[in-house]
Length: 255
Image (cartoon, rainbow, N blue to C red; front, side, top):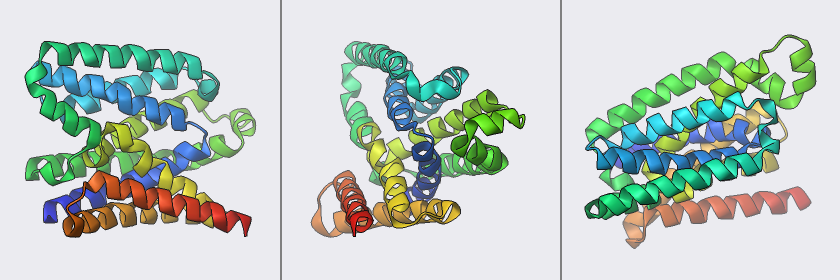
């Protein structure tokens, strides 16, 4: 349980922080697509005897890089992203077809298994989170500027495409890490839910970033605790907490 709490805490803080910028920039669909594209990388890695986490991270980063090259108008290209997503999922199913004996690992990828995180995986998650946090800190100011006033930022010389590409590669790693906790199908829960709720509770930008990370941590640790006492799936509890807090933020907005 200690390893599970440590892993979920590290991933939640990263997911909550990265998720805020994802929601702010209106690129939640891109994040959702990255998680599913990563599934293909993980299943392909299993097929060739490589670590699923390595395949998930590598494939997600490559997809994030490709999406970043599309530029700042990525949000308007949902059809293209959807087609890339469909093709990637098709390959994922093909890989499973060739190696069905690893169906249990595929299920863990889809729905997460934080209790299965060992010390080696925890070290990998920690190192990846540190790299992502440092990269995000380096681009946070131009990223915030480009997210709020893209035309003005471009006029001031901010390299929008480069910033967008680096950010989506960070998102890709955060998605891969979140998949270890809640699974590929529920990454939206840990990355988008806390960020959307934080924006409902406060209008201060940096306050919302901190609150998003705090809510993600609360949901991850709360889900683990509730699962321990109820024997229900951790991912279910994290999803339930995320949904409850998000709808509470909607009520707060209308009050």
